[in-house]
Length: 253
Image 1: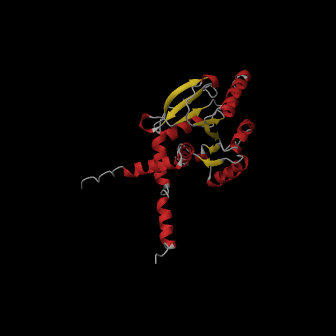
Image 2: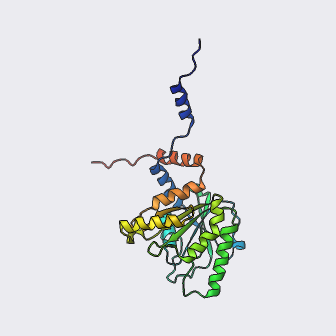
Image 3: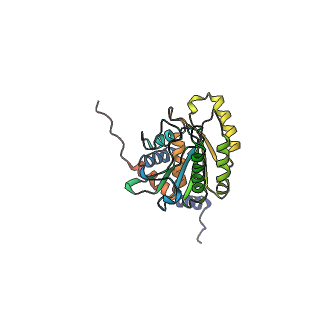
């Protein structure tokens, strides 16, 4: 008489059919390597001037002086990919950067104009707000938004306005991350307090402490961006490719 398969063998078979879990370390290496491929694609003052690339886009937004350009350059491990102007509020274009291994882009980083700088004329501020609002509401390929916030100031009124703009899309599944930049300037207790407050205000988004100086939260943020733009199958393939790289031989003694 043929016996039914044991529960242990059945469980083993089910486990074997599932792709192995991607370790945080392997995924972090894949994400950082992927972001390092970032390169300039296009720049435009209006949404209608941006090319329809058909790739998932991650938008970086935030007040002037919140550390947006520094965060982009740190995540991509490039010194001047995003232009950090000495005059806050000077950048008035949406800048697109392609990302992808093997010289084949599979995602786009969008650097949106900083907002809230007092010295900028009111007319320019209103124009930027219209450009940003139009992009965040109507850009069909938008896969996620990263909001840079100086935790010493917290979310400002302009940040709250931006949250109101994207809230409907976040409720529909748009990925959203708040990076509390310049976290190295906070004590541990101040950082914990800033996290708690921001999580209450983020409207369902994720919140992380981030320091370009101390590399705090860099790989964690990179992993999130990678996950937003890559289905699990692609993540597993990238992990396997990273693990397959030969180790560096030890130096001769």
